Image 1 (cartoon, rainbow, N blue to C red):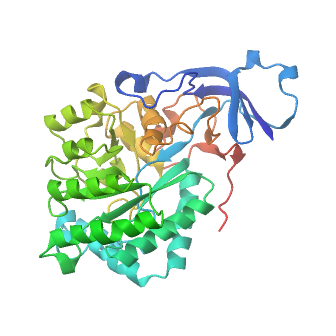
Image 2 (image 1 turned 30 degrees about the vertical axis):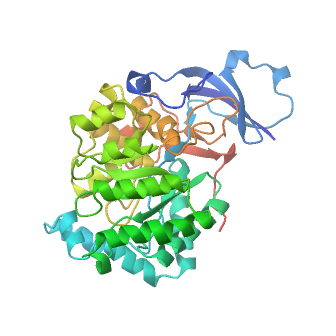
Length: 419
């Protein structure tokens, strides 16, 4: 089946010779075509260019035309960090923070991740699946065209496996690419409070072999942070994951810089995520690697903590990706359009830099850059069509509003999610 998008006001981020990721000034130098067309066949981009290159004899067999007069077309957004599967929101903790408690204080008294783990243990698997699929539907409507899903609210072997099985079921049914991350080391369960190394042993010796045996994950993750997992414990888990075939994607530097980034780079992590607090050693470690820094500005917005120094990262000639961190405790939103706005308003990225971070670099953080992230021949036609607008800044300027007229998944207009 052929579909032809015509009269596109601006076709954004086209590549004739695709690169793995963009860094530094290249993030603000995306190639675009004015008054363009784009041809899709069998869900793939097969041709694009200025309208003057489009002739009647070139479009035989086209079954559908989409007139994009006044509209911009760009690659679909990619969310490389989510906790999509959870039991219920944590609105009570939201009120606790309003009354002055910090995220760390709530966690210390049994809230936070431990609260989500307790709630998840009480919820039937079918309900977990249905709720997560409903969230995914909302995310696709606001431009998400590929996603990562983590475990981490189980904190026991059976509960972690249950989360990963639900994620695998979503992966099989979702219309967009889904990558899965095993995050057994998200927090120390209460029964291991006095023996955290014993829990690390459980993650490595019991959970990990079963995850690998059932082929339930693509990546391994650890929350490397004071009060959670030390750098040494993180190193043990990442090495075990790598030996089992799971590449690291790691939570690090959310509240403290404790050397976790260096350990992640040494363990060939595809990405390091959060990075609200960074020191010069962190920048140096990233400069000598292909590890993708991932900022999660919605988390900073919701918790009232510092934002990742995104401007300094890009100005240091490093790459940057953006993601939601969708979860019930610190980021109860999967809206990447809002992340785009925060990146521009709070982190001082240009709209173009933020788009590069949400598409090209985010796809790299999921090892999907050969399929998604830019307009290139052979890539999957997961695309966004804006409402009529005069600049790319129109989208982040209208924060909290969906400025998209269409989301195309595999070249087809997205309308609903099959159960």
